[in-house]
Length: 362
Image (tube, rainbow, N blue to C red; front, top):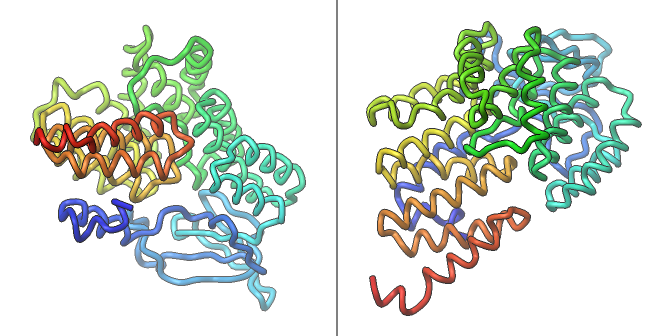
């Protein structure tokens, strides 16, 4: 497929591939992995909380608890090691059969079936920290199905259980500007006023930017951009960028990329999407496509936003006159994101761009 062999065919995509493949997304394990013991990847103690995600050492044992603040691990010799949450890069837990089945269903795109199976797995799971992991997966499934209200409520239940959650990357924020329906707008209004839970205010403000409560949402985001949790502050700042395309210069928009590089890698997918749209607004189609392609390359598990980014990137390349590359991106979307509402239109557009009449007109 286009994105697999893009290095040899499109040098500017190769740059993205090199950057993206240097880091493996996600910390929580992959479908089909069943470990006899829990496995934990750690940063070296001296590395602090670098955004790079680079791992140092691996531990094996039984994870007794894992929150954003700490991880407690029983080692094979019986000793219990307590590790700061900031050092944890990735955890691969020993999974139940139900959990593995749900993971497989999610990878296959059978999201409704995955949700049902995740709920069953969560009910039978005795470990609090793994139940929170399952809730993160459920949040992702609801969001991919377009059921944002349920995604939001599931995420907020998760974060109430662990306010410093390592799963903040699944927060179902709005990155594509569109008006929320009445039910979601009412839910977002409730989320916005939960003053004791910054993630809830962030979530509510995100979905109210395109509503009659726009100013209240912007005011909340400005406050949250100074939140003591740097992750919340980063995301609030990036949400504000959605409102600033017309008021920021091209140089200022380009500066957003430097800011994104300071963010934890797992949180960069939405900000990169906004960066791409900002560059598109300033008539920089190739640079916009470069930013947008980071999502399907590095964050394909965010399936709906990754599909949207691939659609937008194809449109930017088409605008730049790179018609054959654009057509291949549309085909990539139709092939890789078959459950997306954009899959059908993408296939149709690829066919239109590939017609002899179109090619002879180039």
